[in-house]
Image (cartoon, rainbow, N blue to C red):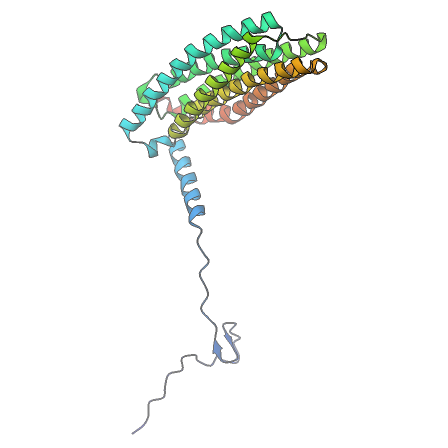
Length: 278
């Protein structure tokens, strides 16, 4: 009875063929699969989703929110925008009064920023006035372009006033009214900024996030009035701090406006064929 030869678990390679998988008569260990990064997959998937919905003239929120959820957040956005308009009009009037009476460049800058906040909230109202266009990318990008132009015009006015005050060495006058306006403005604007930013994240709205950024700048400027006034009260030699803060705020608003236009103008052109979604 003949024995059946055992099958080699690792056949001997043909000497004429060099097999890199066999070394010294031993089978090479199986190749390990490269680890998969789940976070990278999620990021790639989100980018593909974002590209696909934008290619259809829609925002990414259209893939995340149910219709009734989107409408609920839209109504909340409209309410917040109306409240922001009313509040910032009051703050703008108070800040302009402080700027004229106390010769404060930062107060003037805040007053202009508050006026800009009124305009940006009005643009957001227009953006979400049409319930059918809650996810419209074209409408979103148009709103952002308008905001960019408004930011540039506002920044020029703020810079002009601040530079003029520095050149003429205009000294600010400090009193309790200035402090009261600064504190109230700073607190209210930061609260509005947080609420707008949260809504903007949910709705994936660059226009609403821009409005939140503007409110945040207003809050920072409100506290900057307080800081520059306190420094001037204790150290009159540092009279230029108020005007310098006005220049910095003007440059920040200008930079954001330019960035907004650079990002959004091409997208308006790309999505102009999807105006039917409005």
